[in-house]
Amino acid sequence: MPRDSVGETFLRGLQVTDANGTVQFTTLYPGWYSGRVNHIHMKVHVGGTATVAAYDESGSHVAHTGQIFFPQDVNDVVAQVSPYTSNRNRYTSNAQDHVYTSESGSLSQLALTGNPNDGFSGSITLGVDPGVLSRAAI
Figure 1 (tube, rainbow, N blue to C red):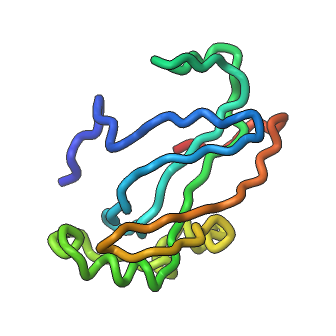
Figure 2 (tube, rainbow, N blue to C red; figure 1 turned 45 degrees about the vertical axis):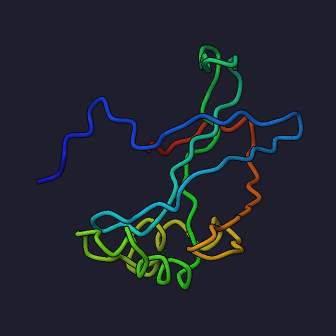
């Protein structure tokens, strides 16, 4: 039975872009869960007000909702490293993930360098039209 996620944050965070629309953050390599491959959820808000302590989304709208994926060969290597080896969910590949396959996941795949022991560095360029209202929800 799935665990209730009400009130949980599951490593959610907020990153504010600079004047060029660039954001940089550090995180861990995500695991996989039932029926889903390793991925990061994202939601791009346009407008609102950011302070050091919080983001007030009043007056903002969501211009993009999506997911960032990882190269399959890297997922395969990471799956063989602790603590991922103790994941009790059946391993799901990019090709088996319904979101990856139905929403062109290969177009939102990070370019990675590094390894599981020392860590990875990744980058991706996403084009977001700030005037568009996102239809999808996370």
